[in-house]
Image (cartoon, rainbow, N blue to C red; front, top):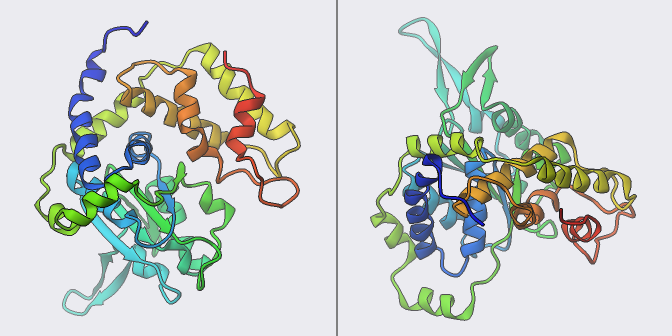
Length: 313
């Protein structure tokens, strides 16, 4: 039986408003929107892999406007340089000193659009920012704003002009999702209503950056029982010892799975985690981290294999 909501959970009321607002802009994708919110609340970063034109950029813009976050967009291309993302120090002759000009990474929500069209060297410019929430340029370390959320989009790997993301960068993304085509009723509404661009331009924030920071802190206080920890450990151990995957889940992946489950529990208006919360986020958290041992695409997703092999407590 669900226990009454704590003070932390009562703060989820504007969060439900934010979910509904984004859902009115991105039609027919409620589960994907909820995963995006969970990723943000868990202090992670989100990778969206899908065909062009299905709403990846619109989702990022809708989140930024609804949550009142500073937003920047970087279009990744083959000639993009790391300084185009991080910023550069230019000599100021009037003051006889170098002045740092911050790049687009210095925003609360950064959209790295078509991230796999840039070279691996440029892709790696995001690694320190995503993991440490800071960048080091010319020997100086500069802290990124809070909250800091990267949404990267990528086209399928078989599309022309793409570079595969290195495993080290894939592991920096707490979740990977797709959007897919909208259901028929949602697509009919898209065709009959005003454009999403017009609706986005009129959208007013229903939350603030400070609200998001408070909710991120509240996620850390969502209870995880010993039995639930054992369930998480069994999933991690199965990924390492089953022989089905080239490499098992790392400790960082285990922490990501726990945080994502805590965030999902908050979205469900609970102050404790259930196995169902773990199962809800499991595909988005682990499927991009696990590769089949034989190197061939698996008919069954890794998350399904783990879920079927480990008993629910």
